Image (cartoon, rainbow, N blue to C red; front, side, top):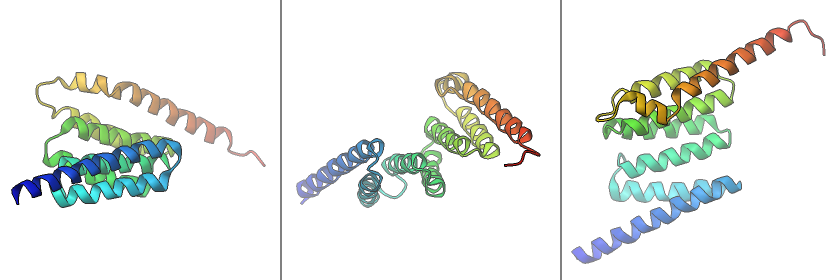
Length: 171
């Protein structure tokens, strides 16, 4: 019985890897529905075998969030980012938490929602300060948070300048 259960678990985890890899491959090819279905299947298997707050669930939720972000489904993306963040906090995976917040910041920046983008960027920087055995500056540099903040500030200024220059113009 134990051998049978171990084999079943091994096959299930192999299937989740296959589903996740398929989802990662489909997304950039524009096969959004197939990617979502693959990630959802992987998520269900991880939840059943590893628990709803396992690292595998967190990673799959993050991948699903990226898919939704890249297809302009912000509400779905943020819900999956939130779910992955709960796992990262529970498991004290501060670098992954920082990545998740930066990815949200990218999503909000791309949507022109600069206040939300700055809020997410601040959260990413706060997460880097919790990393153990690595200086926060090293994590911030690896994630290019300083450069991202500069880009965000420039884009916000550009958007403000653009909206001011359009005031009073008739179509």
